[in-house]
Amino acid sequence: MRVDIITCLPEILKGPLDESIPGRARAKGLLDVHIHDLRDYAEGKHRQVDDYPFGGGAGMVLKPEPIFRCLEDISSEGDPIDEVVFMTPDGEVLDQPMANTLSLQKRLVLLAGHYKGVDQRVRDRLVTKEISIGDYVLSGGELAAMVLVDALARLLPGVLGDSSSALTDSFQDGLLDAPAYTRPAEFRGDAVPEVLTSGNHKRIDTWRDEQRITKTRERRPELLEHRDTQSD
Ligand code: 6GU
Image 1 (cartoon, rainbow, N blue to C red):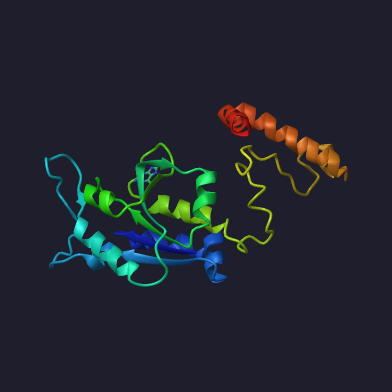
Image 2: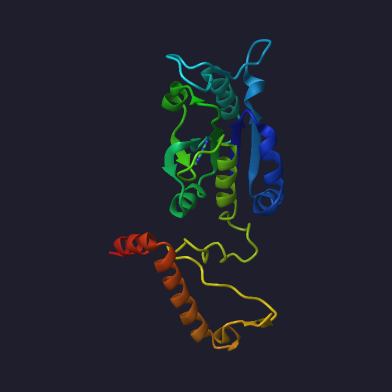
């Protein structure tokens, strides 16, 4: 998968993409990330990427010209672009099914918004999908773009060591994960649940299923309801 990220703060993106799962996916050649500094596409002595909003109001708005130019440049090489995604708190909220679907694409462009937003003509003419990572406001779309890239990278075939592990995650089947333990079997007076050291895999699976349902009911009951209506 190739992901092009358009940003006016490229430095934010460099560190996280070299580490962890996205770093591994890139090292293995399964994920190709290109970062584009919007300022390189801005004109004039001041290389201005934003301007005051027409009609007044607080905050600056990203100008259309640098974004159009940057996207034209990006589209002129490589595979066709599948989606141009604008990262914005008023987009569709990212969830696991959306990540699964997007992970099947060959080429994405992510536009990280900043300041007060972006000129509406960019959204009308260039953007094909708008994504939020949750109901809270970040100061820019860069961290949200990193969250999305991480969620996608770990779904790409061959990225995770154990190829089944992305599918057994919390949320892949709409339930939260069961508690996990490792050695020592007793630590400062707290023992690992007996079933996990019993060697009886049928009992272990039953225990984990029960734990997952109980935890989901306690913490995220709406996930259970959603799951019931989905399987109807
Ligand atoms: Cl995608 N961008 C910003 N600025 N804030 C957010 C977000 C995105 N998703 C949640 N909050």
